Amino acid sequence: MFAVDAIDRNILAVLQEDGRLTVTELAQRVGLSAAPCHRRLRELERAGVIRGYRAVVDGAAVGHGFEVLLAVTMDREESVAGFEAGLAEIAEVVQAERLFGEPDYFVRVVTADIAAFQKLRDERLARLPGVQRLTSTIVMKKVVDNRPLPT
Image 1 (cartoon, rainbow, N blue to C red):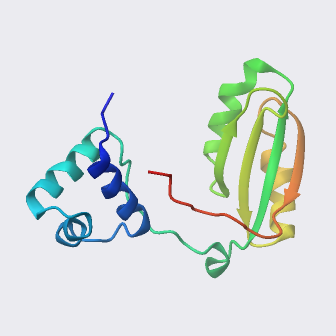
Image 2: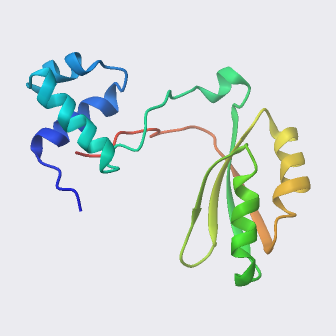
């Protein structure tokens, strides 16, 4: 396992706030020169501590402002692989987690509106292998979202 020290944690904290910094800017913020900062950054990437970089997009601004949390209860354990493979094929599914206990999964779905969600639910999600019950909860407001991990 990769050992993350205080300097690495500082690098991670700064990058979680602004992943577009140049190595020079990052080095200045964490109190290193560019070369050692670059070496640490590459090692964090190589070790899989940093899994990637991406933009955080406002769903409403791109037509996906309707969000639903979906609790999924399965009727057959042997259907898990087929369910998960099918779920991975649905672009509107932005997060899915398998759980211990009831329900079996929590799935975060984004669509344009309630009509689009209803169609997706009825025509694709409910037809996935092993689905016994889908319980939908509409997101009213995001209170904490995309918070950086504690470092």
